[in-house]
Length: 93
Image (cartoon, rainbow, N blue to C red; front, side):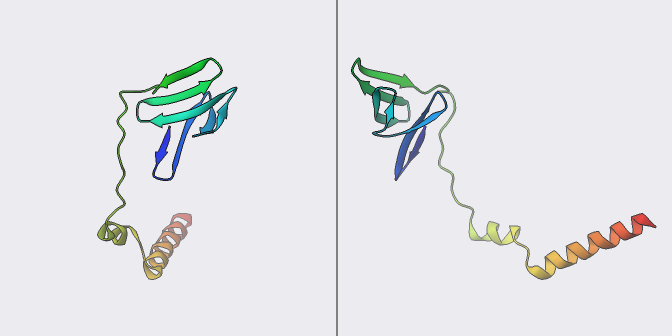
């Protein structure tokens, strides 16, 4: 399932179906954390979440200090590149 503030969809038999979209002759009328509902000529059919034991969590973006720690400026990248080139040249000797 895909649940976000601006999108709701389900993956049914490998096919992504948007809320309001069609799967066969049925329409996807509900998407929530526990499953989805398809409505069609045979009535409503509820499909439950395939892996209910899997937790659903919201991923928080990294803080600015974490982002800064993972970024290298161009001089640091050049120094790392030169060190690697130098080490490779010494191995060849």
